[in-house]
Amino acid sequence: MNTHETPLAEGIIREGLIKLEGLEFNTKFWAKDPTLWKQDKEHKEFIVKFLGWQKVYDWTLERVDDILAFAADVKQNFKYVVVMGMGGSSLAPEVIRTVFGKQSGYPELIVLDTTNADWVHAARTHIDPAQTLFIFASKSGGTVEPSSQYAYFHEEVKKAGVKDPGQNFCAITDPGTGLETLAKKNKFRKIFLNPADIGGRFSALSMFGMVPAALMGVDIVKLLKIAQQEAQSFGPEADFKTNAAVKLGALMGASFANHSKDKLTIITPKELASFGLWAEQLVAESTGKEGKGIVPVVGEGLFKNFDYREDRVFVHISNGSEDDKRVSAIMDDLEERSYPVMTISMEEEYELGAQFLLWEIATAAAGAIMAIDPFDQPNVQAAKTLTKQILGKLEKKEISDEELNKPFMVAKDIEKEVKFDTLAQDVYSLLESNDYIALLAYVYPSEEAAKALLALRDKILTRTKRAVLFGYGPRYLHSTGQLHKGDGNNGVFIILSADAENDIQIPGQHYTFGQLCAAQALGDFQALEEKGRRVIKIHLTQPILQAIKNLSDKF
Image 1 (cartoon, rainbow, N blue to C red):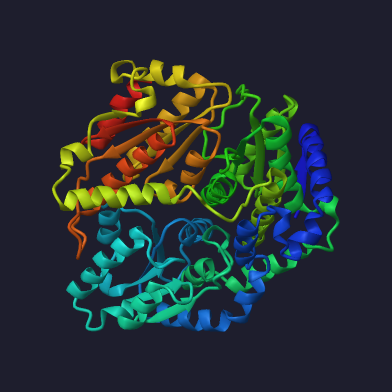
Image 2: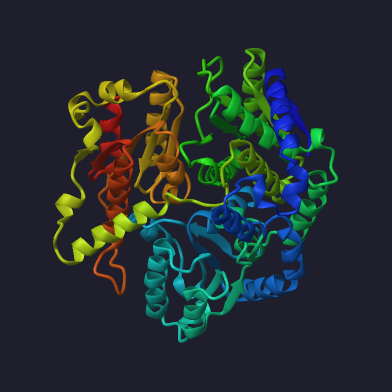
């Protein structure tokens, strides 16, 4: 895969390559030697259980006939396919869905990775449950978001008059999970078991990514074989200095370790915008821990002649499209002004599989330079635990909806410093040398709301010159959520919860999707507060678009 680097990026890459050569990266990585990252017994035992993704394209190709036979069955019997998952189980299908688009004659693929009631309602309104195959995708089998979606859509399929509702469901999970048991009990149409030694965010080329791709009509054999071919240029026999995956990892790791350039800004043309979401999870959840963290910045507005801070390094994924010409002009401007920029060329959309692999290897290499375990996520559980406690209080009526959705909340460490009336001034005063701001919106992204939120993001960017992360909740909990709690306290967080316009009761539970989503927003606020993070929570009331605009006026 071809790359081009600006002079400053070349120098940083050379430093990173020297470090990786000293670590014997190529030898140890392909030998699955955990001492590349950690020396203690506990970490080493954990790491060796999560390296099954290195050549997973071979494993998947051996099972491709089974996938394609199921795809033929689905094509004949269903009009829609809905992926119910979170994080690594949903982001790769979302990238494939948006990059390839609707394929003629195949079902429409919809990816639902949310508990937002209005988002779930929009998906339900769009489909006919009787003509929909639902993919329950979960490595652990117990993730609350797809479990809640399953409970709801299983009832909707029954209401639609389907005699055997299990035949409208497929499971993708690890062997021995509760989901496998559930799928067998309820006679799911198909169960795909994934290798247990592959972490969710490294699973794009396994069943989690390839089954949805095949069902929507993407040629997964071509996708996997191109990845297999490109892997030769990333592998142990490849020239270290021209290995695109290792070079990217060297840039990422050395930028952080040697230059305090921790804001990895991923720039793509609009056709590849969703790839940024996948890469964001991979990088943030893999490197944001132990007081360290590479901060992926994706989907940011691009402005010519913009004066970025010195904490930036840029990676441009180029596909040669018309929109890419616009992006490339800005990259040229950055090069002229001596910013570190690496450009990775994609000749065609089917190189997407190779792009997944490239970034996975690069992230492993960056983790080696940073001396962290890129395969664990030690801080993710905190928000889940607190959410569960809040839901328990709801059931016992120990907390009301009013308390759940307080209009304005400020972490105890900064409560004397932040007031709603002077919000922007107070937020900006919290920023220290290398900080970023994160807008975390538990909001249904209608076209108008999404546009207003991104305008707010750009407004803060242009006012502060700081990196402004943006994520929809609860999706970001399985992505940048690890970074938020595991890095060196480098973020100022603004959580936006919101009233549901069309709330939905979750079958078998005492709470609605709206309450679950609100509990997740509050749970994350509490988790960030417990970690001493500078966090503010603002509740938006209907109409949401007006509430966003009112908030934006404060900035």
